[in-house]
Amino acid sequence: MLIRKLFKAEMAHVVPGAYTQRCNHLHGHSYKFELFLESTQPNDANMVADFKAVKDTGINDFFDSFDHAVMIWKKDTLAPMINQINPERHMVVPFVPTAEMIAKACFVVCQAILETGPKLSGEKDARVSKVIVHETDTGYAEFGEKDLESDRFPSIALDEWMISGGIKTAWKEKTWFERVKAFLKTSAPAS
Ligand SMILES: [Zn+2]
Image 1 (tube, helix red, strand yellow):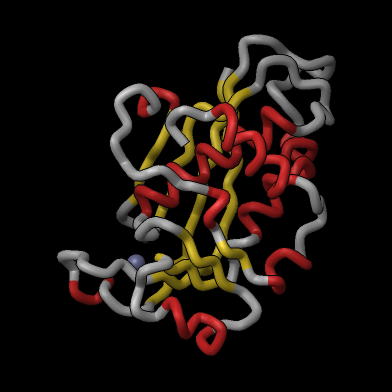
Image 2 (tube, rainbow, N blue to C red):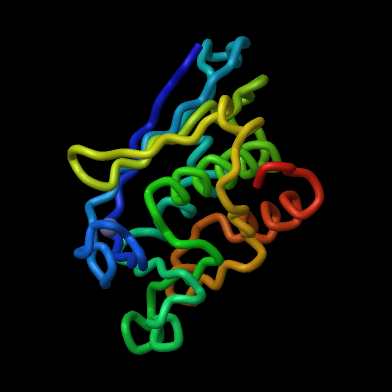
């Protein structure tokens, strides 16, 4: 059984070296994130999982981190100026923030949040099967379980992410980030 939840965020990024010149400089998109969960066993309410419960384990905070934020590669020429560009809401990450890499990051992080968090709705073997990141109305990137074995995209290296204080203070579930970082350090081969 497959269920899907949509998250939205307005976010700016830079894709240095992109073929499309207008992506080379700071610009924004209305992102849509589709999170797909799969399970063979229902919980007591005959659901894969209650999405409200899943969101409360940190997944809502993770997607909310992107909203009205700037995501930038740590080696981008703008990175040293990030506190002037958006002091409140920025994420400096160890990869070029393409839709592809954001999709991989969403998959890895959401799967880890689910795996390490409390099963608030009594979900049994619910897991993230894929994430689709729509950067525009016409283009998306997808990363899912089927990609794990042969994936050659860079590691998302969550322990190297620098997330601004303004984003972190808005998180309702305060433990997910440290929990997931610790988990990925030891266990996720393709993260
Ligand atoms: Zn873009």
